[in-house]
Image (cartoon, rainbow, N blue to C red; front, side):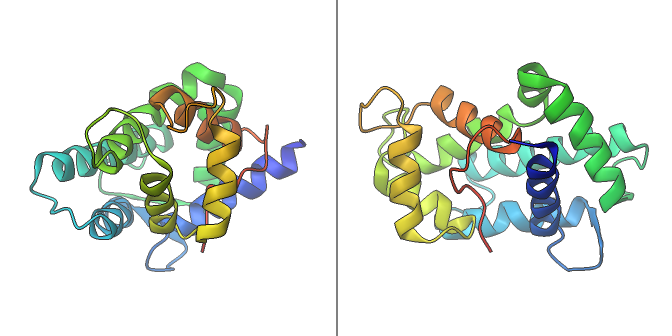
Length: 178
């Protein structure tokens, strides 16, 4: 895939984080997404899983605020976000992705893993993607493509690889909606 596919996906990610549509992203936009996801799972933000997800989102925001120089309470423009994401997620490769996004994916897996087996079932995955705005039919197709070992469950490693590869433009599995 080309850099334009990566750019398009990063721009889409920016648009999803810009929850209030003001053209910049800030701490409140990350909090809004975390709360929307928690709501989709009927999880309160003060529960252990809720606190872990909110903490992971805010840590991701703090890293972005640091990388762009706006600090924890500033606002990041589309251009600043794209430049930082390009450096960290695309040029930074697996290590950059892991530094920035793995903790959030791990918190999402913990939230989604309603049966406590450490992996994500097809039903749990569909619920996750619906929280991200992806339609149910697409979730089933995505699950099959991500389940590399054919176990019928998704491990943290499979999900990290899928999200990383999506944002790096290596596949077209639908992981973002709206």
